[in-house]
Amino acid sequence: MTLTRPTPRRLVRQPLQALAACVALGLGTAATAGEVEVLHWWTSGGEAKAATALKGQMLKLGHTWRDFAVAGGGGDSAMTVLKSRVVSGNAPAAAQIKGPSIQEWAREGVLANIDDVAKANNWDALLPKPIADGLKYKGSYVAAPVNVHRVNWIWANPAVLAKAGVKLPTTWDEFFSAAEALKKAGVIPVAHGGQNWQDFTTFESVALGVGGVEFYKKALVQLDQATLKSPTMEKVLTTFKRIKDYTDRNAPGRDWNLATAMVINGQAGMQLMGDWAKGEFVAAGKVPGKDFVCAAAPGTAQAFTYNVDSFAMFKIKNEANVKAQKDLAAALVSPEFQEVFNLNKGSIPVRLNMDLSKFDDCAKLSARDFVASAKAGTLVPSIAHGMAVPSAAEGAIKDVVSQFWNSDRMSAKEAMDRIAAAARAQ
Ligand code: BGC
Image (cartoon, rainbow, N blue to C red; front, side, top):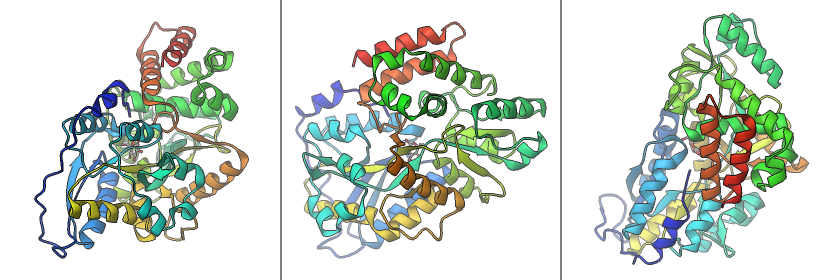
């Protein structure tokens, strides 16, 4: 997600108009039924099933759902569309916004305070504190969370791995030997989509696996100049670039879910992707442990890169719609919704102490590693998914990483100088 800072700054000068006053009252009681317009980018198979669960929840409460889906993995297109809608004074009730971008939008004065919902539903006690803090602006909740996605995963088709005589790799050395064997067996070793957020999703897993947690935090979260220009960074970039040899010629521009489909149908062996990929496997009727397997990305089993999806609530005027908006916020964190949504989405509930008996082994591993890494200090935010650094810095760094991935001429040394410069400029 790339939210360039200057655009939201301009938002404050635009008067916010009320959302369309006309409320469809076909459902529920006339006194309380409202409309919620929800912006999201959940359009792939698994994502759409999860979004439908949310719509169902709102219809049950008697409200009308207005779907504002903007296709495009990682949400870059959705954020561009959101900006123009808010600038024209026509914000949706809720939008999928996460990480530091929540603060950027809140500073513009366009987000609604939902403390009443949070208090009534005890969010402070039910949510992990660092996550709750990120949903607040000046101490008040302005967004509601839905899940915890883990980003540092590797997914594979076990039948394809068996054909090549390899196991799911746990180190980068094993990864490259497996990739070589898969290539010899005539399959595409790594399913990849050449879009800059996907390039970076791979890059940050390599950074965590090759560089370790301290390196990851210093280089990519704190944007420390010396660490960004260190020999470790050079090794990370070189390892990252080696992966490209094992992707196919049609990777540029490919959507992430089409890359997952290549693993599902046996055209490719492995994919480095967050666990929304599991939503895709499951939506295709595939069984975890049998038709597909999961593990932490090579070298990252002791760490957890988190990506929390959340919905920021915008200031709207129509009273019935405000009620619908508050009902939406409450529903998002409710145990029923957390279960059904996350079963479809591939993520785990963000609400603490949930019963996970209906969840599969990948989700259970994720939940265990989330708690263990929080204790060990190895829980790190995903940069690729907007959880760590201001959006302008994130966008600038992502661009350089993708240029490096796509260039035959740029050396790792040059790439790290440019990444450091991009980080410094923000
Ligand atoms: C979001 C996920 C989404 C994925 C692919 C991530 O940034 O957090 O919810 O499934 O992008 O679109």
